[in-house]
Length: 199
Image (cartoon, rainbow, N blue to C red; front, side):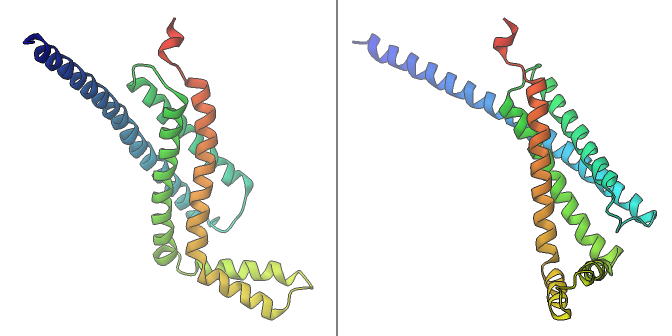
């Protein structure tokens, strides 16, 4: 009878040890993900800001050149790839698809927040006429359509002014999450490695 309480105590201690070990391991795995997503997300955000300021200095802020977008996507792809690779290195060379996606999309989300903050500052302080210029460009394009009346054009222009920030913030998030997910998926499939792969 005296052995049962002792045995139960030993089992309880064993379960507590295993639970604590599992919890600690999960926490340790989450720490590098958050740190890497933050660091590389900030890096991506600041590089995107630098690209925008270079275009502004060159007077190409309002140009919708395809290569400008392509360069932005390429920069994002490179930084997300490097972030996921860094996670793999910090995780003893192992990487699951879920870990790669979590890290990559996290980087894209942090970068999106930085880009949104910069966009608000840019529109309000650096280029105060930005929205008016966008509306004017929009107006000139609509004037080419004979079916558009002045009233319709003015209404659309006012809508652009009223919902500019809502639309812009939404587009930045959607763009970053979509590109971030695709790049993270491809990168994770290339770099993924589990303990079973060793044998």
